[in-house]
Length: 314
Image 1 (cartoon, one colour):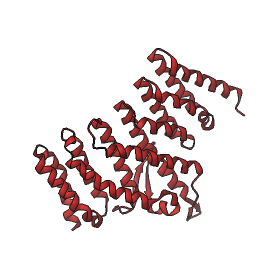
Image 2 (image 1 turned 45 degrees about the horizontal axis):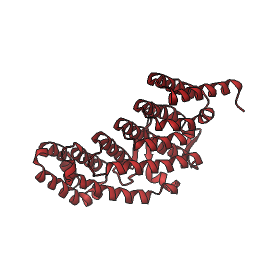
Image 3 (image 1 turned 135 degrees about the horizontal axis):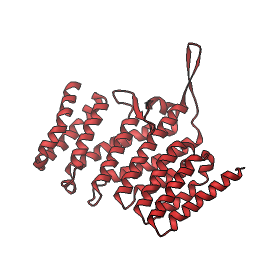
Image 4 (image 1 turned 180 degrees about the vertical axis):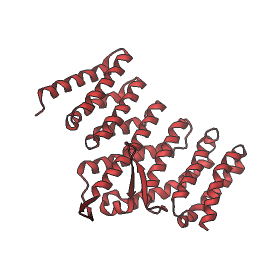
């Protein structure tokens, strides 16, 4: 049972959330949300989790700044209380499709951080290490149910962001699509087991760097479905090539971002596998250069390191 002081604090948080939702002054709404964040950070995670469902209503707020503040709360509080963040991540997925580009961009950026953190957590739960004297023992553990549930949400988040990144229809704000491509980059590089380095470096929300052996993780966690994810990676690589031949993107910076993405991917991927897919990619590059010569200089600047990489592979 919660202590009286905790119950009082919870009541204060709910009152502040009501103000953030219903008050007519935007400044009051924002200051209320700032106080809510401080309260959530001060409580025990299990108590803060009781307040999380009330944050869900704010994703429908007509004020952009309120929705952005909501994402900031999700990021700062949720990453510190990852075990209890299911509701927060579900709200984040809803905001990925927000009509305001700044909200959508912030949602994708924050979701990318959650993706890394959840993958790291699964890694630490599957592979535990103990030491007795000078002897170090490696054990295979079991992933907690809450972590499995969060990974299920991350798959939903991935699907939503991939739909944005691969949408060739005009009208989507370039900044949102570029961030969607950045998430795609993070996702594919982390879950691709054929990379030149089997252990991927993931930077956590605290800034630490952790090595993730995705093949070993998938072996101890069948629900990761690495085979299915890799099939999706291959399909995505083909679809990305269509960016370079889509006339609706000519006025945007996306074609160069896609080519740069391929350069980074090739640098991490095994040379043999990349050379296998290189023919289709190079055809798309060539078509793009000849059809849209105004981008020739920019394209060649990012193609040069790719050419050097391919020569070194041969």
